Image (cartoon, rainbow, N blue to C red; front, side, top):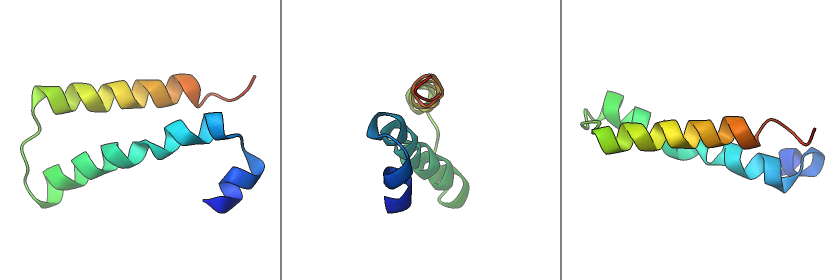
Length: 59
């Protein structure tokens, strides 16, 4: 991760790091059989949309 910060800007990389929350929900649903509620699904979609919009680069 330090290498990523060396070559990329923080404003682009920080939203991508927030995908850890999405990964946590997916792993909890598959491994721990946690229920995925509508609120969790909407939250995942909002996080992914934000990463796509912001993580597009500095162009």
